Length: 268
Ligand code: DGL
Image (tube, rainbow, N blue to C red; front, side, top):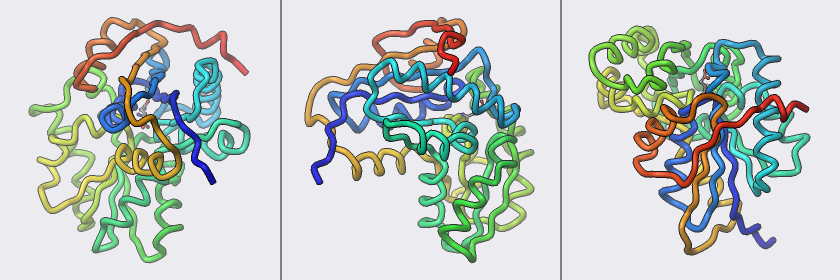
């Protein structure tokens, strides 16, 4: 079967976390228009109920659909945990979440089959990672802990230093005691703190996030232009100024446009 040629990719997260996925895609694809939505006015998603998370997700999707996207990436573990089955069933556009990708990678790199996960409260309590891992590896043991304070730290740009290290340590210590060899960064905000997390857990523990597995999955499933500049448009639901600065820092590069949007117009 001929693979579809992809020009427009829609990506969303509650805030800056999904930029870790966008960064990986921009670095490795050419000639693609990226439409990134950060629902900054309603962040964090990870402390909210499943109904609220699904409701916000559907508005995000309705907005991105107006950009004629060829693929949708839910670059938010929390939204993926609660909405992916529904989106896969009801959207015509191919949709990818981040949980299966991260679970797959963790199972393939873990030797001891003792895997740790940190994520938002909603992601951890959804059991989505735990179930995805168990589907792939019955003998794997999974140890998880919600790490909610890491999201505001990242949104504030406080990703290293003593405060960040202490907070990371507080969340990771109980999982490390379980002698894991792999730790899933089960929130797209956390890879921004990878250096700090790596320092706390030590070199022996493998850190897994979803950006690379998502890229690999897309490259296997679709065709992309061989050349051409990428274009990146960013949309936010709160003030664009701070987010613009944060985006340049997290993307390690610039973007073409940042704009405020009102998602209430996109209710289903
Ligand atoms: N980055 C998001 C995730 O991957 C959520 C952060 C939040 O809004 O709580 O779950």
